Image (tube, rainbow, N blue to C red):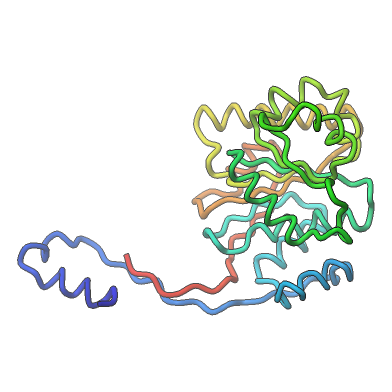
Amino acid sequence: MNADAFLHHLMSSPDYENQIVHVQHIPACEARFGQLDMPLPLALEARLESLGISSLYSHQAMAVNLTREGRNVMVATPSASGKTMCYNLPVLEAILSNRTSRALYLFPTKALAQDQLRTLKELAVPDIIGLGESTTFDGDTPQLERADIKKKARIILSNPDMLHVGILPNHKSWARLFRQLRYVVIDEAHVYRGVFGSHVANVIRRLRRVCDLYGAKPQFICCSATIANPQEHAGKLVGLPFEVVDDEGSPHGGRSF
């Protein structure tokens, strides 16, 4: 029984016919692709092709183009729409063009950081970024590994709490990161609301002040599920103006609510 037949059954049943107050159908949508203003580096383009990716969805291409223009970008599209590519591609492109570039990824949980590290390593093979140059840094990171991470890592995946208590108070030992920080990625930005969101917003402002101390002005890329006010939310969270990418290009089947 498909969704339409099930709804018809419910609405025809004397027990339920008056309990269905609203029905909404979202039609299926085919993929829409976009064009980059300039091609990706050959190594990155070859890696995408080896993964079976020959084109970027329209929102992915728009996010990369805006990032290349120096804008802070808020990507607000549904889950499983390929938002990860919106920040991994600009970050890896920056590292390929300048091996001193670094990036800091912030996730709300350690588990999500570990999951995204696996995704990143699938894309960033050793000829794009060296072994050990992308890693997590959180409370589970062994003490013996922390000094090497501070020296060698190009992409550090962490969380706001670790940034607050483990990185910013010890910024002198993280001088390489802060001097060369090109991008800050804030994933799942919609979870930072209320009192918790206010706390994280202040941590981000501390991060910006420390970066300024070391002469760096990183771009911010935020990713969020679909929310009503993505531009306002990102602006209040980071304290900077943002461009919004919310016109999803990935395909999806029809949905009934």
